[in-house]
Length: 292
Image (cartoon, rainbow, N blue to C red):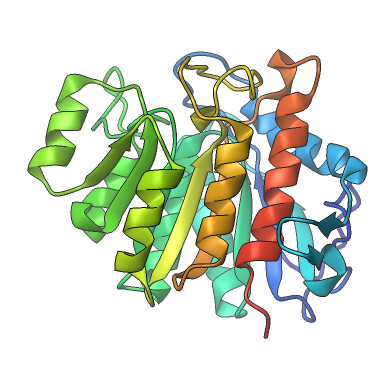
């Protein structure tokens, strides 16, 4: 996928028209080939863009406006339907190009497996990378019903690549007993049920380090985000998740890339999930993208 190709679809609000002049690249990864319950997250990126038109361009949380950050919406990567491995290879190649151009990658999903090739690409540039992972699920399985390529496996894959001690998961409330046991035995950091307070304790330990942040929208309680493939009761509020984004923004960690995944608009007629995701993306843009 070439960056000089004009994207004719909807773009995220206030997207800059020029790739070269931008500090960051927003891109969609419309894949849900390996989901274990309800498909539909491949339509998440396009709907997040569409509803972003309803956003205010100013964030009262951060006292910043979208015009202050130049970001280019590259559209969706044209992934081959039903081919997980080829799709993952294309995503990794795309992010390699973004990083080689010196841009910050901000991805929208799509199922959570798409985060795996992104983090692989980021790790190649930042070998001392740490991961902040917000999710309802551990995603630490080695396989799901015999399939290693599954949205249940990306955090296990990245933990094995970076070292489990460099992966910090928050809001976790669902997973196999064996997954929690593996994390404990291998030094991975899992904070159950909550995000903001345990995150505040971890961030000073990550000061100065490059960090990639991946957010699964199902970290939110279904009352706040029903439009996702695997809803799980007992989650956090949208207020707490916004607070976590802002806490990272004011910390001394170096956020070098991020994504927001598992938005499945078809399951939410009210569109509150897509609208919430859109606002979260706005705060990620304003809080995390470094100015040049």
